[in-house]
Image (cartoon, rainbow, N blue to C red; front, side, top):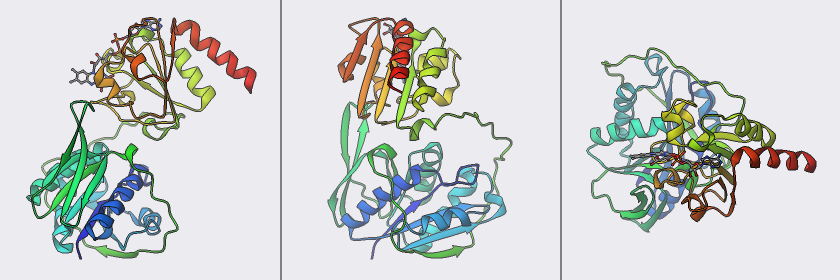
Length: 321
Ligand SMILES: Cc1cc2nc3c(=O)[nH]c(=O)nc-3n(C[C@H](O)[C@H](O)[C@H](O)COP(=O)(O)OP(=O)(O)OC[C@H]3O[C@@H](n4cnc5c(N)ncnc54)[C@H](O)[C@@H]3O)c2cc1C
């Protein structure tokens, strides 16, 4: 029986990265279409706790590879270990969420497995040996249907397009394996985390983003975010100006989000920005310029100064509370 292997990801704090659950759902859909078995792999220094969480998500087996050399993620150490596992399992498909780690690791793995690769898939079609991967191109303005013709096929999953796999779906067999460790030319030096009490951008139900129209003053945006329990995002113009950290960037070269509510304040709506938020359920735009392209994708729009609108919005919200 063909095998779909989904690679789960452990965060630096030891917890499972939530996007892995969305990738597992994609893996499940693929396994159904291809008549395959779903397997999950997790690597790390001590991935046992995460493996326990993965056990109930509906896979046939969870492969756990623990090694001291895998304490900090490096593509150079993870790729050989995963390639050896995929080869031993004779996996036909290997996939992972399109996170920073997934984007770094999967192409290297694909090269090792001599596999063709589809990045950032948003859907699946076809059946049996004829699987079609849907993926956005040109900043989300074109959707391609891709067929991979190599024996092993590698892909990354756009997490916002698949629901998260729930737990409690029976217990997968947990199998430990000894990861193949190769000498690495790169070395982990330091991890600098941006500490925030707000929810993670890609996991938040509500996102409030500021653009160049804020002129770098994010106080009102942050205050509204705190009132709503929302995450703060930004356009590239804002990150490039150094007004907020880069990890808040939404868009083609930043993060892709699809929250229930996306509020864009002082953002013009360049295609590269829309590529990262177009799939949000409800989009609200606040912009002084009625001709701004953001209004073409907004469900609700206000043509006004954001420094007037945001405080008013907050005081109306206070009244409702
Ligand atoms: C290869 C490539 C990749 C890129 N990737 C990304 C990406 O990932 N994410 C991204 O965001 N961009 C990306 N960009 C940049 C993108 O093209 C735009 O330059 C950028 O999104 C513009 O940011 P902005 O909307 O904040 O600024 P602007 O385009 O300058 O828009 C500012 C808006 O604020 C409004 N405004 C001004 N003052 C106020 C006020 N007081 N109240 C209300 N509105 C006000 C103005 O009317 C204007 O519409 C990329 C570009 C390239 C070439």
